[in-house]
Image 1: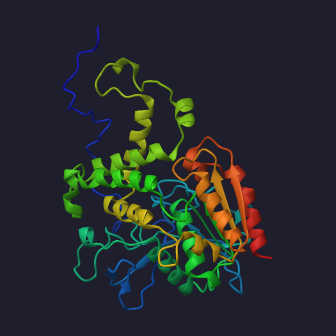
Image 2 (image 1 turned 90 degrees about the horizontal axis):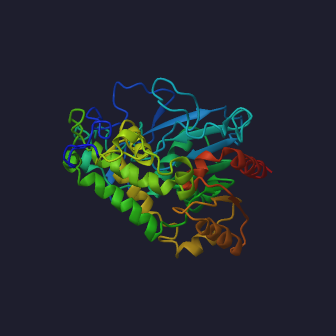
Image 3 (image 1 turned 180 degrees about the vertical axis):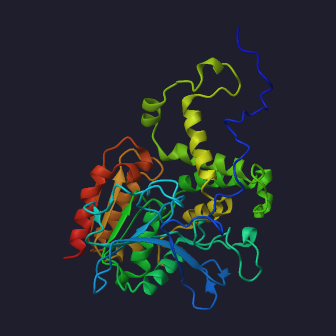
Length: 401
């Protein structure tokens, strides 16, 4: 006989813990770990592409290696949607996880910190030290919250350029990144062609597609319909009363798109997390437990408002905006480009990276295109370090010639 259960509306605590914070943003008093901070504005408001402005911008960043005497060995790493400046390095105070690209950055690795000076900054609008919605507005003394303006990928790149100026870097050996990071890479090539010797955009696109926008939109809707969102002004909410349910759900939706059916079937199949609760309304399959884990993990290190702002910036990404269209923008790129696809990526499918290659070369530019055969889906650009490493190494070597 099936287990007698409570009403379906009851969600067990293991799925929605009540101690989840209102925000996982880096706040005053928190350990900053290896982060450094730079105010990149010069006393004048920073005008945003969409028409808003920010009075002051602080950028959180990390570095590895040493800048050489002529500043010719600098490499900029650009992170994806929920990444941050901790691209490499161990778990430590202020860094609950190993660097998101730790296998590729370090002594003797693909991005060799014995040869290169490597920089990674948290994007504008983020929540791990760079000015974003959780930051205090110097004009009001309160968190920006709902008043934080929409930023674009171009605004992010402009702040990175200002950071590079203050670090004494006139030209990057390469700008490297995947997904949203790859969007930044392409914008570097279009905005500052004399400031970058090569581009390495991975698992990305020259303009967000309707499908990418669709997935992003439902993730944002899950956040703003959470009663704990309070219109975006939730920073004084106690644990358990912020918009964690919406952010958790948004992350779970996204996580489905980041992997492949093959990986989910091989890893989880139809296994139950607790076979004794198979017929309970909230008894979970292993795949549900996996999604809940990732949702809860993000809530503890990210901010709901930042998720809205940064994911919308990805939807707004269009390399051809104001440049005569995507084809014209790609055909103007003259620095060497290396673009890489993950064969099973359905969110940023290989045809989008193939378009980058085809249009750059059609315009007379140089572009190498590689496909990594992997079942990992979109997350393959983070997980497939072994096949990715020689492609990045070769691109960096050629950029120095």
